[in-house]
Figure 1 (cartoon, helix red, strand yellow):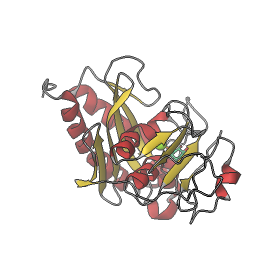
Figure 2 (figure 1 turned 60 degrees about the horizontal axis):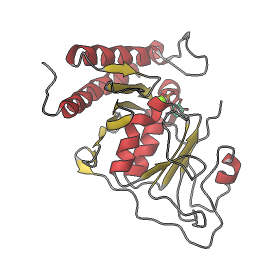
Figure 3 (figure 1 turned 180 degrees about the vertical axis):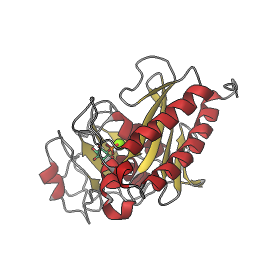
Amino acid sequence: MAEQSHDPWQSAMDHAVAVARKAGEMVRAALQVQDKCSPVQTKTSAVDLVTETDQEVERLIIQSVKSKFPSHSVVRRALCAHYCPTWIIDPIDGTTNFSFVVEGTRLWACASGFAVNQQVEWGVVYSAIEDKMYTARRGRGAFCNGRPLQVSPQTGQRESPYRCPTDSSLRKVLSLPVHGVRGAGSAALNMCAVAAGFVEVYYETGIHVWDVAAASVIVTEAGGVLFDTTGEGAVDLMSRTIVAANNKPSPRESSSSWTPAVQDNNI
Ligand SMILES: O=P(O)(O)O[C@H]1[C@H](O)[C@@H](O)[C@H](O)[C@H](O)[C@@H]1O
Ligand SMILES: [Mg+2]
């Protein structure tokens, strides 16, 4: 079918939802086959864990986008610097959990974000084990299985000297007077947890654009905010650091009521 001119981004997003379901089924099936969950060597990176299933799902997405939207680019490694509509995909976000069957395999997801002119227009994150399809279109809200998402209304207390975490401050973050700290391992799902109001803040350094592009718009459309780890600037999805939160505390505002999903992946 040809690309539709009246709302081309919407038809791309609908397609991403369908592909994510298919990808999720593929990944679930692969869990039964040891070889498909084992890390493979790639030329690109020794650090980035990749399995045969990552590669299969990546091929599935690329082929389906190329046949349906031939003018679109598909990348894992760049937020397109020019106008070109670009899918930023993470075939399996949480490959470590998938590969090592961590936490009952729950925390992995298939994620696609779509950027035009460096703006993320929509995001789709599918948690196949939970059958949760998170979607958001810029300016049109965020949803999980069609139900609207809203970040937590929780705010901090004014007395605390807490500031937003900085790049090198994992120890500080871990000792904050918060209810609890979790590092569960899928950036996309951690951000969706912020969007859904389950946690108030997610923070990570060492992250890549494909880990966060899809969920970035899900967070903001659910009423959340993204900022850099100094707490001062706007987020740059290429910067490899991110804070996603239900609100942006002023420098003197407390985190004491926050329940962060925190990870630090400095490499
Ligand atoms: O490599 P994949 O796509 O599995 O993504 C994961 C990152 O590699 C981790 O840094 C990060 O901590 C998260 O676990 C993230 O989701
Ligand atoms: Mg990832």
